[in-house]
Length: 146
Image 1 (cartoon, rainbow, N blue to C red):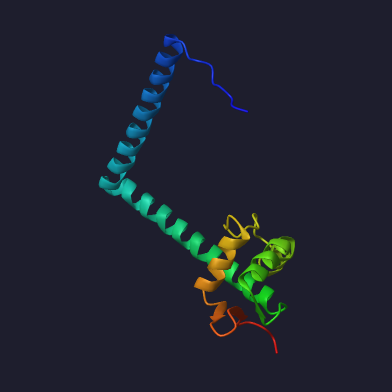
Image 2 (cartoon, rainbow, N blue to C red; image 1 turned 90 degrees about the horizontal axis):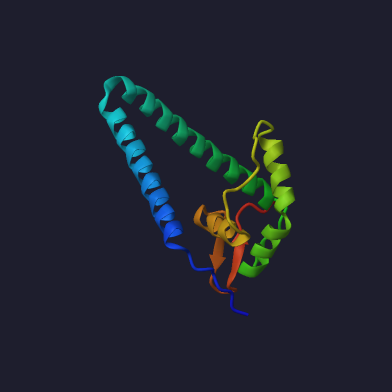
């Protein structure tokens, strides 16, 4: 069933345009202040330290995610299809969070920054945790404990 939006009055349209313009001007002002900070030698040091801290945090999160997935894969089957891996990842979300907490108890947010199990599966393939066997068209678990 179609839904219809009510028509806006000219005053509402004018208010919306004014809000958008004010928001855009604020964004531009903020970006100009940020750019000016990089040119100022005193502020530049703080900005460099902040960006280095951000890069270090991202690196630590990636390392934690990788170690968590490696530990998770030691308990999983040696080979499965793509669909099997994504279903397993979707069903084992709580187990992955528990492993992450056990590796790094101080972690505030236990998330993998993956939108879905499919994205997490692609990350595992990209990092070399799983490799594709072309003969059987299944993915081999490189961390299976024998």
